[in-house]
Image 1 (cartoon, one colour):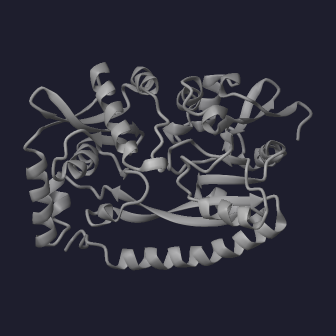
Image 2: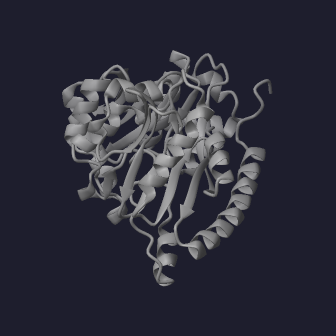
Length: 379
């Protein structure tokens, strides 16, 4: 490292200058941006009280921020979507402490993105060593490092340095140059195509609006819908995002928020909130107050696909899980995480398990790809 290099582990995203942090993110995931991370902290959504202790790692050359990593100290495994609860239970039964743990990632957002951020004007390899030294300093006092939803390149780099790889998959929609929704539907066989049309007709008995830039009233309703969805998952459905956080996103990201609202007369009865950046649409929060057949599919998938086609977006990431997405033309896409546990016995045991699990994930993904409901584009 150069003589003027400083590596620091901070206690708050408020200690980082927003524009300098966002320069590291550049064209990356919007959920890595300072407005989102600091917003979660300032609005008391991700704080030590909710089990998310901010621990950003930064590298400066002189006064210039050249690298960083979105760190958090966790006292539990909620809100992560990598599902290591069984790992924590195994550690507990073996008398091994699993928490606290350091994660590099974004709270409540299973969206792939770089976790080792280097300024795009800097040679990446030149700063990864310093950044890793900062991560190692941040891990001190915890029981392990967990890098969630990192990129494939980062996952390989970290695996070479001892943080073993874990695989999962999500279902993403990809725009193959469709001119309209019917053009996309042409990829399906007749039975599936008619089923989707019927679902859309049934849901569209309500008034459905799709637009960018929600009103304050719509954000309040969307937060109510999100809260209602969380309540359906019992102890796993904790409401982390406050109404104030939704309002904040409306103020800072109004130009990025794609909303779908379903109305029955004057009442808003369901909707979805998505985020646009670059050529991607990220599906985030959905809910409803009225049980309307197929409203979930219309608000969360079909309207979003319409929006992507109309605006030339290339990829729609609707979130984690859901075989119902696969049946509607979303393709299985691998996601990655890396893990390094302090206790050698636990690390080695979970490393072996993750390798076996990864083989099964790859096999299942290959099976799904071979049986995609979408016919070849020119069929």
